[in-house]
Length: 102
Length: 272
Image (cartoon, rainbow over all chains, first blue to last red; front, side):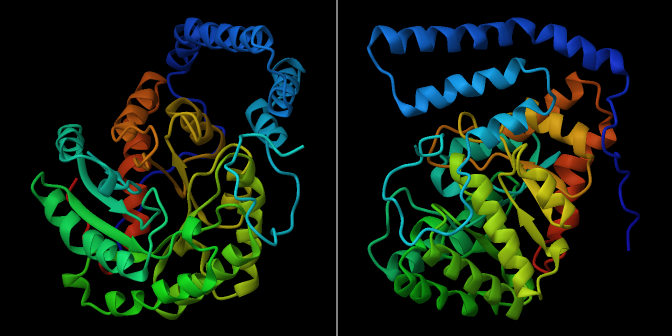
C-alpha cells in the first residue's frame, strides 16, 4: 500500500502565519462591504414595509456576530436551523427559506 | 492538478469541461441527482443513468478528464416510495459490469431533502443496497434550515444499520454546524463551494484549519443553481493566499479524493 500523504493536525495555523494575518487585512474592505450590504438590506425592507419572520430571525442572528463568544459561524447556522428532531409525516411542499419556520 | 469529486456535468456546457481541464482538473465524479423537475416516469431514469454511465464519460474524455458516476434515486424524488423503489430496481444490473468497463463508483447522492419519513425509508433502503453490493456511499445533506436535522437523522440511521463502514461513506455539503459530528463518527466530509446556499472557499479553508486535513475534500457540486465549476481551483488559491503549504493543498484537492475513491475497484487513479 502506498505511503499515505502527510496530514495537517487540527488547529494548525498556516505557515508562515504572517500570510494568514495579511489575508485578514486584505479581506477587510470586502467584509466591510458585506456588512453595509446587510445594513442597506434591512433599511430597504423597512422602506418597502416588509417585516416577516425570516427577517426577524436574521436580525436576531446578527447579534451573534458581536456577542463576544467564539464559533460564530457555527452558532449562526444553528440559529438558522430547524431545531426539531423527528422526521416529518409529509413534505411541507414549500421551498426552504433559510430560517426555521415560526 | 485536482479532482472535483462532486459535480453535475449534465447541467454544465461543454465549455465548462474546457475551462476545468485548463485549470488542472483531471477527474470528476458525478452523483445522480434531481433533473430540475420531477421526472414523469422510471424511463426518465433509464435515460439519465445511460447519460451518466456512457455519454458523460465520452464528453469528458475529449478534454482529458476521467468521468465517474454514482447511481441512486435522489432525495428530492424519494418522497414517493413506490416510484423510488422502481428506480432502485434499475441499479443492480449497472453495478454488475466489470470494473474495467464501468464508471460507477457507488450509490449516491442519497440523502434527505425535507426530512420526511418516506425520504428516510428510501435512504435506508439505498444504504442497504450499497452494503449488499459492497459499494461506496455518497450522501447529500439537506439545504439551509434542514441541514442539521437531516444530517443527524442520517447519522443515526447509519449507526442503526450496523453494517456501514464509516471510511466508505462521504457525507457531503457539511458546514460549520455539521462537520464536527460527521468527522467524529469516522465518516468522510465534503465541503461544497456553492455561493449563497452552502459554503465559500474562505469558510472551507477555515474548517480545514480548525479540523485538520484528514477525511476532508472540497467540491463544486456545479448544478442547476448559481454555481462555479472552477470552485475547487479557487479554493486552492485561497489556501495559497493564506500560506497553506503545497502538500496540504494537494492533500485536500487530490490525495484525499483519490484515497477515498480508490476504495472502489472502478476508480483508476489518475496520474498527478
